[in-house]
Length: 186
Picture 1: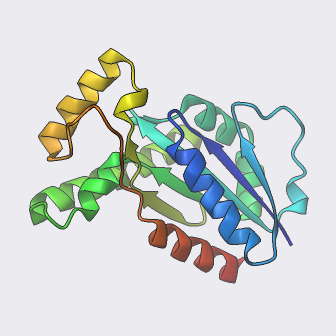
Picture 2 (picture 1 turned 120 degrees about the vertical axis):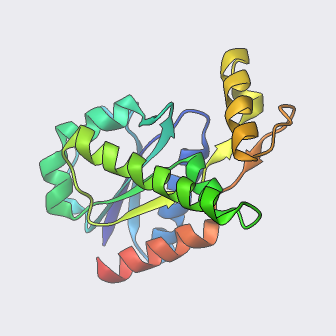
């Protein structure tokens, strides 16, 4: 069997997540094509894929423009393939934070879901399954303006604010479980 994982990323966390999805599928004896949609030029052999996954991260309230454009162009193929969607957002980190008050966790979970719904509205595509995944604060990779804005957002949400280092919040076991469920149903 063959699978495809399409991703869009800025600082690289979504690439890491897409690579993990691909690795998990390969561990199930699947051949996997991993595609950065920003660099994708060749035609896609959609019928070759038994499983298709799309992964994109949220920046300033929207998923990456190139992924929105990709999904709009290939919506019919994604629907036929029963493609799944992994939405990478720091809001999910807040939803999973056991130290945060229940009200803040619920608000963060609602925000992560709202980002998925906005992506669906912007693209016209309803994935077969979705998974919100916590991303990373890549302070060392941000320019000075983005670093300042991310630090303010992090402070308001009770997230780390030391801009001399990066923070990864991804729940890798949740990613593995999602891939397992998709592989068993696909």
